[in-house]
Length: 102
Image (cartoon, rainbow, N blue to C red; front, side, top):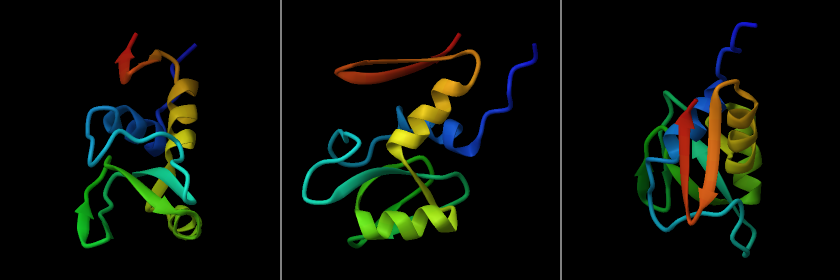
């Protein structure tokens, strides 16, 4: 069986494990903030900072919905789920995230 072509969200999740902007992010961090990953070929300006493709950023929930619909970001949870669906990719979470091609 041929491996499925990775989605943009899956590619973003793999790269986001390496690219880190700011503190280590969980899927959500209270205060109504949600961790997202900037999708390829996009740049996001938030709180005066420029976040390039594959960067992980905490955003308010109402902004996340709008940006997901526009295809600028994907939630970190969705990016991880997409990465796990791809054949040949493994994700290990133990303190820091390690993603490798199997």
